[in-house]
Image (cartoon, rainbow, N blue to C red; front, side, top):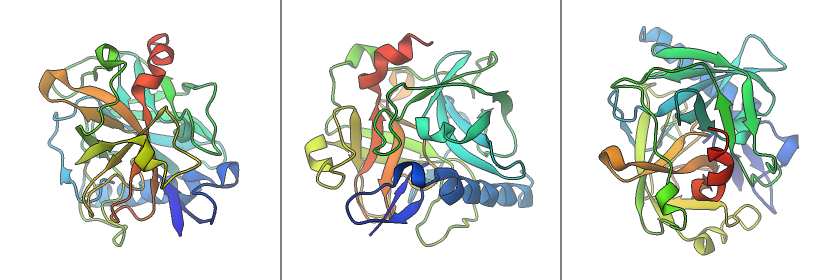
Length: 281
């Protein structure tokens, strides 16, 4: 069976578990190819996607941040991830997005990754001290960046400080990203940001699929066959609620291959990392 990191990840053939840790590079297997595909599509239109989702109008998710990733070992290709805006100078992403990276270009207020929007470079990234690339535990990182002015298409997401003990079980939430939109078609005609509705499931159900990866700080979701996060969505937010009361409850971390098969997907559970995140805002 093939498994992959999301970010929403690359496929490696294994028997005992979904990941090979440091032996496997997210960027080479997933981020770089997907980033290059998006760049070509955006330029042609002069301008790991959500599978089975819908395009997002500009401003619907003003906290969404695209990440163009500049790598340590190659200058002519970039990788990609997602992130979420927390404050004027802080954004949140997955730790594995920073592996082998030397700089992020953060993209605010844009439906596309390589063109448009406000673009800010940053190499000031703090990865959670207990991040483990072998099992994806504690897949969280803070990005410090230059001041971002809020407006109708750029504004922060709320963290669930008033729901710190809520497991959100059974709740429907929205994930978003620039990743692939199909298992079978790696080159979609539309390179824009997309979203999908996913339902939070119990860790007891999720651990049956990911026995080595699901812990108390993991949040899992399930969606109908044909709808889910996918390759290129890593680091992006999972958001619950509606209107001004929306809160971020997860960070896209890992997924089974393929994205359209109806398997659970894994997120870093925001409530498990609230003290660490809040102390760095």
